[in-house]
Length: 123
Length: 106
Image (tube, rainbow over all chains, first blue to last red; front, top):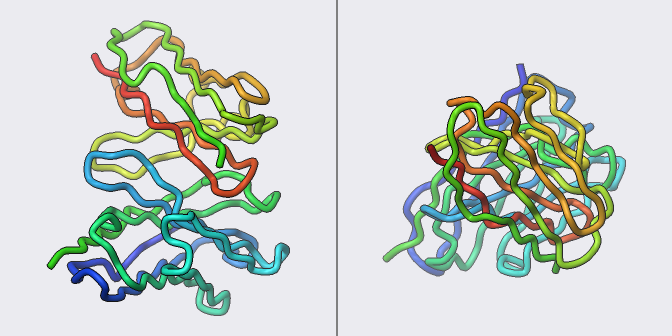
């Protein structure tokens, strides 16, 4: 069974940092790309960033709203992806989903979603 | 950035209805258009990828058509469990962008 589980969310003050983890199981993790997608309370879906699979060299890409503040990394030996979030702002408050992309092309589609981890940025 | 515009933002329907949701891209996206369904308090789930391919386990009453800039999700014989919010997403180029969502209500 495919499992995607996020952790690391919580309440954090503006300007501080937080690292989210995405632990996966049930599939060959190295074959897949991963995107982080967030959803502010009562709002729609916003793509945050992406890390490709090894075929595409583990390239990363980010939304303009987080570029330079957020970074994504992966450890294929542990089947984990990380989202490092620095200089957090109130507008980063959202439920953060870790998602799986089958990697048939650089960007394919999201075929599996975690349940999300809530990040609240507030003083 | 490619902007994705969904219409309508919400609609009311009844069980058994045929429902059509449209998604328009500000630039061509080829066939790189995906559809997701989200129910309250739940993570989204994939319905359709690459415009018209039905994801595994998704009922055949869901279908997708379109190309380049104009796309449609159709639900035939709407069921109670289909009342949800639907999002389109382009995966043609970065940043990957979602439409604003269409809420299907009773």
